[in-house]
Image (cartoon, rainbow, N blue to C red):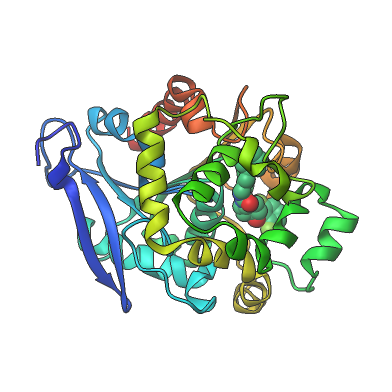
Length: 330
Ligand SMILES: O=C(NCCCc1ccccc1)N[C@H]1CC[C@H](OCc2c(F)cccc2F)CC1
């Protein structure tokens, strides 16, 4: 692979704990040396490894090796039917295997996440602190493992009304209705900021997918037609069952994390960066209030974007990540 930029032959697959993962591997400008640091980038919903397209070349130019998987259920990675393989603990173990394959056994790596990927990288730092060199999250705050089970509908009614859409996404309706490339295109355009002729939304955090509006939704200004075609093609492979399984593990995640609660493991010692997005309706900056108390070293930054900060303000996002990593790796 050409050092410093992604080429088509930088696409790889690896059998990871019984699942085939597809990932992009970007080598650093100047080539790999024994001291090269590896960054693992974890995308969210509904996204792909391609969602990090504005960050990968920037990180390669900094001299980093970049590993970017299609997460479980997405793109050219397998999409198992059951929900358990999509739990935080299981996905963290998958990422640990992938990181070791690229960076070598027991080599600490930098973890970067957006959205669900942000939640995953915080969990990686909790479960595998010995493999965590540094961690950054875009949009997603940290929350500690809880010892009391709160059903998602109660969490929505009492504390996080902005999570109400997750009740719909955990149910059967979206994967039953959003089938085939044209429906998937309208669905993805809705999530990526596309609107109807009278500014109608196809998705809202209060409701979720607004099925009656889908056929009116136009292209998102955040992606070119070719980029959108790629997302539609990639999502047409498996449909939405896998991606939606991420919303069906609240109880599994709670039960798996009791091990962390019992061991009093709720603090993150690795140098950490949170970049919040001012206008993100799913993950508003206010959700990050109070998380500092769980960190030995936390930097918080804000960008003035909606949920898709990686694409809306890549220069600012990359600037914050670059400054953070320069401090960590100096
Ligand atoms: O659903 C997600 N993303 C879809 C966004 C769709 C959208 C697109 C464009 C505009 C608006 C919305 N992300 C998940 C990521 C994990 C989060 O759960 C972790 C968690 C807790 F469980 C409790 C406290 C904080 C915390 F972060 C829950 C949101």
